[in-house]
Image 1: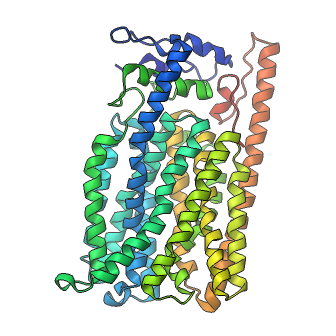
Image 2 (image 1 turned 45 degrees about the vertical axis):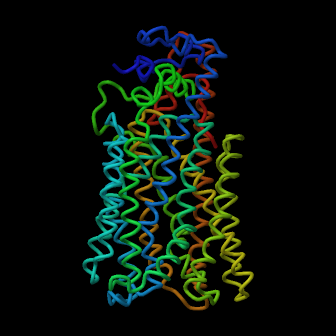
Image 3 (image 1 turned 120 degrees about the horizontal axis):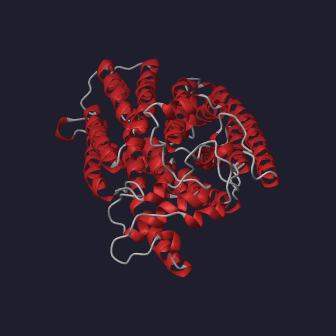
Length: 510
């Protein structure tokens, strides 16, 4: 039976705000044996249990990094394969190649929201994500069997369709376990899989493309898809036994640890991380589309993704420095290692200070400097330094994802849709970005101009979102003051934002 802790939120959405101290009275069903209830644990004992819980959870969620590496490799290895004959073997012109890149995001966009709504309602999301991974690994191997434009387009579409389950699902699962003070750093570790894959894919590509040409009569780029797809399917089987499920039912945790995991989420925002018992399957979607914050983040994030579209063309951009194809792939790796380090430091500091805006815009400004350098000079050293700055702009991207989760804290059905909807809409940026980099003149100067402008739009959007959250925080403060002066009155603010009806003490992170 699901622990009562998971149903400890307010019975009515319009109930007056309550002090956070009410959490001390949360009850749970009788624990097995002599296990003490989380809400009545000795503080020292609870600290030990919580430390063990987080250690186990971090270890099990670490496989998300490996999965993300494979997710990104399977999606973007086409860029490395292009350097060793994929485009010429399949007789693709530049527009057809760009279509092969962008069609993946059509399937990716279509599936994200339905997939995350489903993930939020099932009890074993670990099995769902593992099955999705097994399937996309199989589809990835089929990429190596394509012989024309039509075959490549079909395979890429269905690859995106199945891969859509992973990232929103992983972010949703982590948001169900980690508090807002912990989430950015954990998301950064997850996204290091994305960043490392940019470096790792170049190294794998260099190894396979330089050594597998003609093996068994096949081109090296075909072996690249077969090898990486096979590894993905193997890891998917392991993931089914390692990934956590939900705080109330996940295997591998003690009863104490599961109770503490649930109580932590209640204490984080003052409300249990569960949906209402009478909530319908589409209620989360309805709540999300009524919230203006969703639309601000959708358009802002889409602009950000257009600005980051250089990553799919990173080997090609590195190739403008004049190296051969192996040298190009190898020189593509260090900027992403640097980006990973910057991202971890930036995320750690964002969690420590509980600040979002400057931790997003700071790396963006650094990336803009890199773009300007690339537009301004043909000096090889300067342009290579610029690639480091451009790659480091991913640090803000990671904090942005945690800003999504913290800005739609409850109910989880709405948060699931928010994560998927914003991420899905942002993929339109990848579709547009596939064509931005067709402007090859003067070292892609026009392309760099476009992504610089998109980063500017992103900063404006983040500022607008910050203003919206600051205004909501003022309303929360006013509501609390009214409730304290008139405790018998329902000092509740009407509006579509559920946070305005949360327990006392909740504030949005800006």
